[in-house]
Image (cartoon, rainbow, N blue to C red; front, top):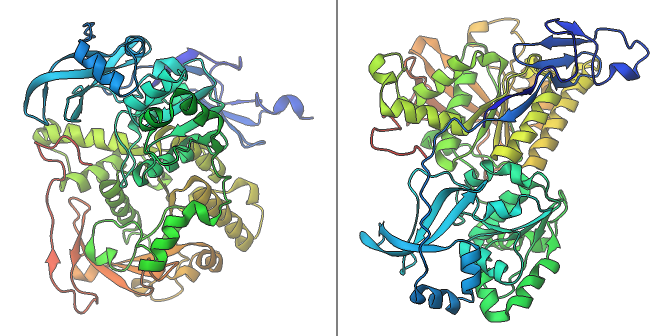
Length: 573
């Protein structure tokens, strides 16, 4: 979401100057007149070199999102007796239907491939109809084409300190029937695969003032999967878990136990588990599955030769090293795009190495399209527009005048909350400093740095990919193959990184690339000292797979110049 300036120069600093006192710390210092802050009026940011804080020179108001959405027209039709009786059979009264602006009307439904009478759940935000969900008699659903995804009933929680989140409109209406009106519903069901909370991204401001958030999603594995993501995004300290006992959801609970009992599920809700603390009952299903089938393979990037030797979980760190110019950053972009395509992840990129942003975005789109986008017919194509939307939706670029690890993690924390970021790329280690440990020895500095990353990765349940350059070789630079111990502070890198990869480029073999697993935390996640080989395409930046497992036996090259976004596709993921 974009912003415009609300109050210019909120601290009353001398306009246009490059250096000033710090509005945050100078008043409390003995040298209160010292000009310890650098001001950038173009970006609207100030940086204090004493307290290390980055502050905004101006305050901002939100503009409308750059992405445009279609808006439906509200159809104020009277409900038929048949529809009212159907809702009554589900425990929902006509009064509740009217209060929640439920309508009905004819709509073409893909489930039956014809126009039929439907019940219409009208989605209002800021008193404006922004979407409609249509439901037919056979439980077929569809949303208004082109409408923005938001929570159902979102306006009713605007001024409340508490909210109940359900997984369906019927469940939200059930709580309303039980007298709980600060209730919303997700616009689509839960899944066991990637969790896409676009509707939370679009309404996150409605949750800023909430003191208690009751998660009343379906009592099944998919519902529990999305519940976990809500806790990660909204904070365990605010979230409370509703127990539906032996039934699946709020509507079934209403029918079986009645309105009073349903209202009491909020009073009986228990706080989400304390972060970092669990008992066996919290992961009982996972434990039983482990005993029967062993540990599950981690997340993969969709390249068979590499996926055979490496996978990862979130909450971990991958350190990637290699000689400058051998393709570390390009390989990390390839990995990240694989995670995005496979799982719908959103990624934060803190990369002074890849500035300016348009160049980096161009590299990403080249991988998506299979070609560098530098022709007028490419730029005018519909797939180019969709590729830009894809990058805009899944990649967030962290731009700071002076990078520090503290500031990068602070912004990433906000991105986890607002956009559900699941991966952070830091490129490179030596250009994003840990300010608080800058005067320590390289060993202690590296230990502090990696400890902070490890703690952040686990607390935020994200994957962190850290690119670290090796020391310069003393001899034989051409054949230099760095290990973990060749990075400054290398012993700490080996001990504290979950995983390690090395990228080596064979220039003499026309850009054959070797990606070697230096360390995999667990045997089921990877094969230490194993390698995957690729052919790097200068034009697209893609890595095509070789089937072989050794440099003297590369096997068959599996080339792929497919445009991942075709003219007919609506979305890449």
